[in-house]
Image (cartoon, rainbow, N blue to C red; front, side, top):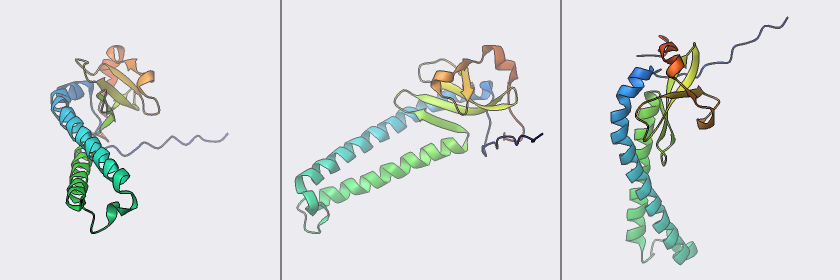
Length: 160
């Protein structure tokens, strides 16, 4: 009989308990609006660059472009905003937190339920982390934690 090879677990910096995730929500309530503002501004910069590109066409990158200074400022702002967003999202990922949908405020924390690596799921507007779902699932596969709260534990190999 062939021996089944267990599915490899992703390398996670941290696995959260429900209590730890709930205690972290006030920090997310600060970070998410800041990210939202940066993303909104990035969209506005993108629209302005697109407007310039539509107007100037293939001349958009020429050195003697009359709007060169404006385009350069927009490009610089684009790079700065992109880096700040990547840094913030990267820092969250390093903590074992995934932003699934910034617009709706959908956040997943890596956790363990019944020995299985799962996402503890929270959405802006909810007063606490009350759901989880498999890593391969998503929002539609959320299940209530209530019955499983005592089993949602930190796996010592993945916590800090």
